[in-house]
Amino acid sequence: MAMMCRLLHVSTSGYYEWKDRPPSAAERRRYELMERIAEIFDDSGRTYGYRRVHAELLRSGRAVDDELVRRLMRQMGLVPVQVKRRRGLTVADAQAGPIADLLGRDFTAPVPGAKMVGDITQIDTGEGPLFLATVIDCFSKSVIGWSIDVRYPAALVCAAIEMAVRRVPPPAGAVFHSDRGSQYTSAEFGQVLEKHGIRGSVGRTGVCFDNAMAESFFGKLKTELVHHRSFATRAEARRAVIQYIEGFYNSRRLHSALEYRPPVEVLDEWLANSTAA
Image 1: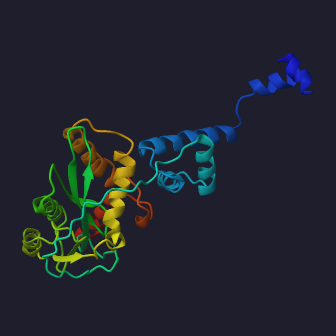
Image 2 (image 1 turned 30 degrees about the vertical axis):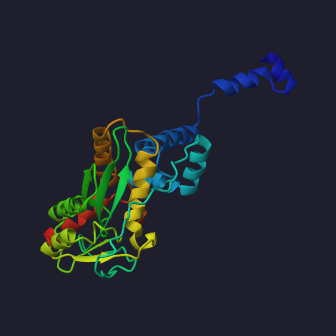
Image 3 (image 1 turned 90 degrees about the vertical axis):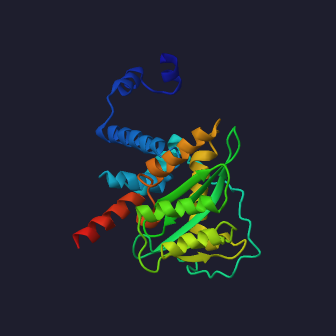
């Protein structure tokens, strides 16, 4: 070390003084911030980018600039998992009657249950595929209904909407929107919607943007859960999907369309306010 100091024209005593000097208050704050950023990133399943990490810091009362969070995450090598394309399962029924698009790509709603969207996706396991049907509330962005099975007949989507209406009773004039898959245009599903006073709505064939909210959720599910792990059994995959929906997405994941709040917080706040009123 003495030779290196001579070569660099640095005094040996000055080097050891610097080396043994305790971190400054600013350095300690920076290290603490980096530790907290790493905790938030890991707790999100390594899915949060700097905007959501920054939002989580603000929610915990830690005022910090978002640009600083971005720089520190880059310095720490914290890169969130990236979205991958999924294989579609939509098979339209040529015999289905006309159903209008009642949303027109407007995925906002004034109250819970007024507008809902749904879709089906496939999850591969070592025992074969599983199929997940979901119902998402456009007001709170939460998954209020879901159903998982080894096949995907109309009964799968019927079970998902039945769960949704039990958890969030739909108001008068409620709408459920989906793609033109045969399950959603079936008489069986239509009867379930009619029983609960829900109007059916579908997008155009092959136009994913008409059901963008449902597509977006499955993109997150695949990116944040499925694509970076494998499932040996269907039971393992089922547990992981339910944990993702209820233990993370609904209750903890910050949603940009909700001003970086988790869906359950928005839904609970509305329910509390409506009860008080």
